[in-house]
Structures are given as C-alpha cells and as structure tokens.
Image (tube, rainbow, N blue to C red; front, side):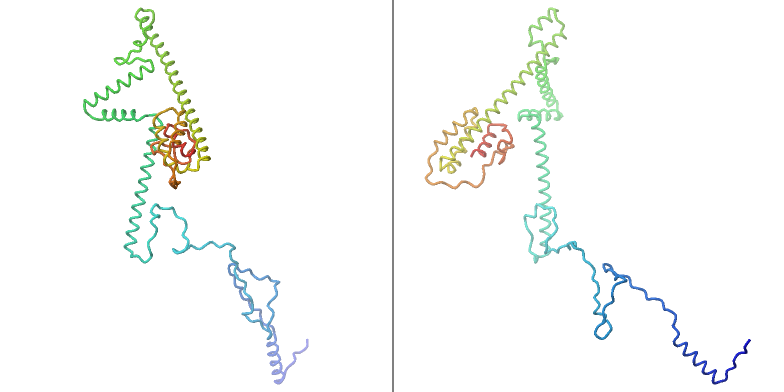
Length: 353
C-alpha cells in the first residue's frame, strides 16, 4: 500500500482553493417547478407543442405583447329583464287596463287610489262574468227540458205553495198535483184512484168488464196499449209538422235571399231603401203568416216604398237581432236552423240584405 502523500501548507491551501472553485461550478439541486395556474373558465389551455411568443426587437417578449385568449361567449345569450321603460313580459290582461296608466309625476297617493279603483273594477267585472256564466247555464238547463214560460211559471207557483208553510198553500199544491196526475194518467192510460178512471173513456171495455166478459186488469192493459198507440201517433204528427214547418222556413229564406240579390243588382237605390224596408219585413213576419207568403209580402212592400231623391248613407251599425232570440248573431246565416219566424227573419236580413 502506498503511503499517503503529505502536503505542505502551500499545497494544502491550493487544494482548498481548488475545491471551493469546483463547488461554485457544481450544478445545484433542481428546484421544484412552479405551479401552473389553473386556466380560467372559458380559456383554452395552450398545447405543450405550441410555440412561445417571438421575442421583440430587444430579445425579450413583453408581457403586454402576449395575446391572452378571451372567454368564449354563448351564441345566443339569454335576454336580460327589461326595465319598466322597456318591453315588459306578457301578463294576463286586466279589464281595468283599458283605463291606461297615470303619468309618472303624479303623487304617490293618487297612484294608490287609482290602483284601488282598478282593483275594485276588476273584481266587479269578474263577479259580473261569473253571474253571467251561471245565468247562461241556468237558462240553458231550463231550455234543454223543453219547458215553456207557462210551465215554468206553474212550477214556480207550485214550489211557492209547497214551501209556504200554510194550510191554504198546501191545499193549492195538492190540487195542482192532482191535475198533473190526471193529465199523466190519461196520457198513459193508467189508473189514478179518485182522480182518473181509464175505463171511463173506453165504453166498449167498460161494458165488457161490467158484464163479466173481461177482467178489469186485462181491460186496463188494453187501455194502456191504446194510449201508447195514440201517444206515438201524436208524437209522429208533431215531428212531421215541425219538419214541414222547418222546410217551409228554409225555402222562404232561400227565396228572400234570391229576391234580395235581384233587387240589389237592378235597383241603384237598394241600399237607400233598406233602412225603411226592414221594419216592414219584421211586421210581415211577426203577423204570423205562413213562410210561403213572406217573399210576396216583401216584394210588395219594397215596390211600395217611395223613390228616394238622394241616396242616404247606409248606417254603419249592423242590424242587431232581437236579444231574446238566441243564435241569431251576425254571421250565423244558415249554420243554425231558425227556431222561430222572427229568428228566420233576422237570418234572412243578414244573409239576403
């Protein structure tokens, strides 16, 4: 083994200086990489292979020179809510909106009173519409039963007597019911003890019952059979008459429309005469004559009108049908068959003239 070399003082100092120099050039431990800031929302991170910005003329890129990607915007951003002065979202229309709005500079108390009045008005309109709907429903319910005004009045009178709480009222209601029982028993051929005897109107059956040739129960069955035949025959007759009447009404309406077209085409004063002709037509129809005579009566009345010297202005307001006759509004035409002569007149005037 070689003996270690013994250095003198000068050599030792030189070795220490050399070691210090080597320590200065030795690479230091790698420092941890700085954390990359997380990309902001909407900013796309740069790819690793992307090129760094080119240096400026002096060799170093300026921070302001590097273009920062901007966040992407939605292609169709949601519209922001409009202010009071802009377009307001659609709200249910209030009846009081017809009053308009007050000026912005009016006192606050005035605005409060105005809004209170509008609220009361809206409440009254809602109450009116409710009452009107209920009334219409009630009228339609009564009409659907085929009740005429006389029957409805009698029904109310009977209910009033029943609920009177007096003996006289109850007697009146009892008499009313007895009469109704008699009518129904007669129509159906049934017995109503103390009120109606069906055999009283069938002498042949009564005679056979009295002589013992026919049981009373069998006789009553025969009475009911005869009543059923009579009832069916009466119903068929009524339907036939209604159909015939409706057909005559439709024919009369068609003839009136044809006459109106002819008069309109050949008489330059047709529009001037119409305001005077309508009352005449109404009186002709209200007279109760058969529909087959309407056209001739209208033609005669039209020819009897004096020739106007100056053609007057035709009233702008359309003819208003009688409100008591439902279903005769403007444009109703023949989409609904008329239920009466006056209703047919309204339809004819609107369609023909």
